[in-house]
Image (cartoon, rainbow, N blue to C red):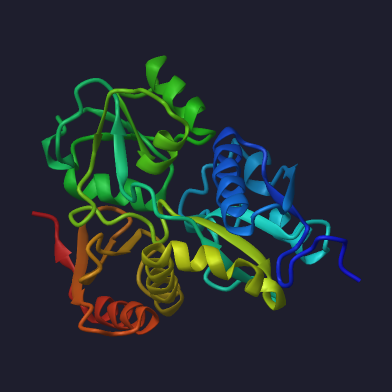
Length: 308
């Protein structure tokens, strides 16, 4: 029997789980505020876990994607019913979740692109001077820098956002590449330059906070889905793109539904930066999932073009 005062379809309490990093806690705070607004008087309890990706800060995941290394332990809490909803950066989620789980909702998308953090960054990667040291361990960002600025030096760099910025400030590199959304959500004031998302497509899902629940309970979060319709459609398109392309194209892969929603832009780089391929597929009224699959198919067929 539901507790006294409970409303039909609205839980009286929820347990939310996330990583304990500063950025994850900031994202959880956004999720709590959104859930509170959507579910009214529901009491929300927070729990924090440490994931494999958090424990492996010495590993740079070179040559492989870090997708999945930050989500397993969070989602296990939901599956085991020790929590009701897990909070994630959407770009960290694998295309297929564990059986019994689903992306139940997303929050309105933050800035989706990459940020070049450091003193007086140029507007484009092509403008970086030879010998400039760029801190990143992301296979996509590394290949992107190798292609657009082959004279630069890549410095492998992991850790929390603040840790990487501090490494840059201490002289380990001249600039560090980060997701703009993470920097903004932490409220960090740093000299930086946002890279144009249609010229340097980010990882699918970048900038979106995802809520994962048990698949049979996603109805609880329907109001949130309606309040972030644009981000929800972007999530559908970008995750279908990622699932369709699989490992057949490149680990150095970017793809995004354009901010206007009128097209899907996809790009892949050879990991050594020697070539890239790209597509721009008009939405043309296609359902988001179909648009993502079409973009993946066209990118697979697109020719590799050598670095100028």
